[in-house]
View 1: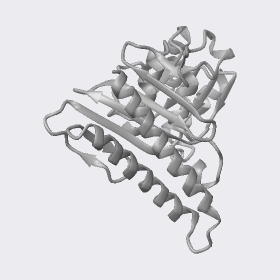
View 2 (view 1 turned 90 degrees about the vertical axis):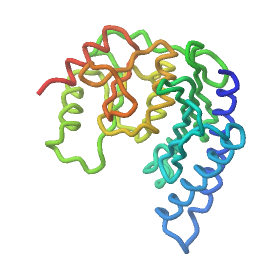
View 3 (view 1 turned 30 degrees about the vertical axis):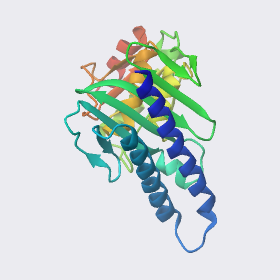
View 4 (view 1 turned 60 degrees about the vertical axis):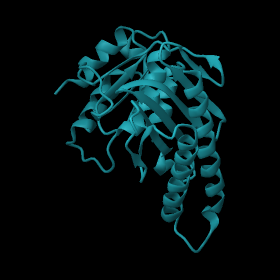
Length: 257
């Protein structure tokens, strides 16, 4: 796994450097910020894809933008988000990341998430634990819902009757604090290193979750669907926590009508 971890980290740094370069162009008058973000996103993904293909030419790839490639007889598939936290990036709010996960025959086996603003590299390999800048990390020990700090993702422009909004409001009444940050990848990293106790969403795509889910579980946390069912990276339903009794209690809170 070490070869794959190194490749994921190096690819994430390549993408992060490109995002920071493009961010400096936001003062340009000839293009809107939205167009610049699209170009930054595509440039980051292209560079990541080129790097990984140079090392693993037979591997498949799934990217958020245009990168989609079947493997050439290989069980491996890279799942890439070249810019997680697009809205934050548009507004120059420094909470976004590059996320790169690796599946083997459908099982997550390696992943890296890079925060270029803090120069923080989160990484994990199946059965080998999770790290932050090379140092082992672990989830929090919180057990009580009322004392927990959580984060949630909500769909863009969700109305007050949307089921994700109802879950958010249910949690708002039960937990100590619930935040909405704009980057699922970094939220999962925050769970993994104990900065927060739980994170949930019903609107994520595989590239939003793949690397972060492995990082959480390798740090000692638990990942399921918000109703407690078995998690699947292909289903937009996620609850990640520190794995204590808090997890099951949050399932009950989030499942209320």
